[in-house]
Image (cartoon, rainbow, N blue to C red; front, side, top):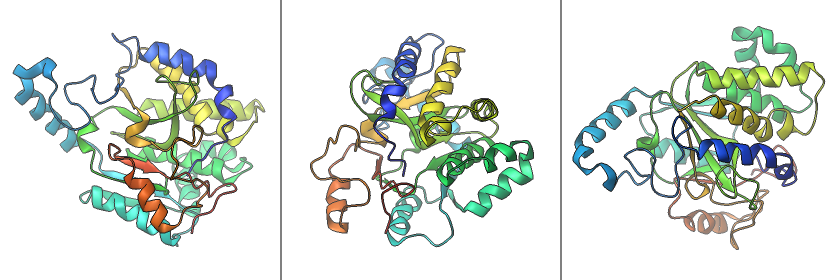
Length: 306
């Protein structure tokens, strides 16, 4: 739901390049998935890689053990409990993909209660945001810190289950294709529209929230993406990776965000909620390798969700 202004790409150029160099370095750096080949022993399709044929059985058993211990909560949010018709359909795709997961719909009132009841020290920052989208950004970071699980925007469609990609004590992000140079992977940006944290209390989220708090208290105010959204997320992610964190996975755009609103890489797909139901179906099905397709309605801005 975060069709962020394409101008923010230039603002995060240096951040993205540093993150590319750090993540791509191997060793103690974060594990980065490149193409269809995982840096672990499983590729996105769930098949064992050739590099560990002798240990396939053990690796598979370990992966199953990890998957059985992950926090199985799907978080989504809307202003109220009355979802637009299309959002009902889109959210149903997640329930179909993950039938044994708990689905939680958070409202604006729920978000405020979560911060007020458990993180009262953050209330001045939360209530001090100018736009509701900024409070929605903050709330999703608290979901993942407090509960763990997956957060995904409402205008995302789950195409198929990807539980085999989720590992205990890891952070999982999906990048989006963009112009060369503005990259985490070559030509890709990390967004906050799809994020997973497979255990509660992961320190990255509190680091991010504290960073946002410091910026707010220092009077550093910019656009929503700078204040609470993808820009500040990538800034903190860069620092977290540089601290030798080894529990971050970033997947290429074709898996979790294949329709790029910066590249306009589809002749079929349209953003801002402009597609009819029939065109939307064609758009979604045009990405057969994707686990998730985001439709970029930008309902928080000048787009619409019907």
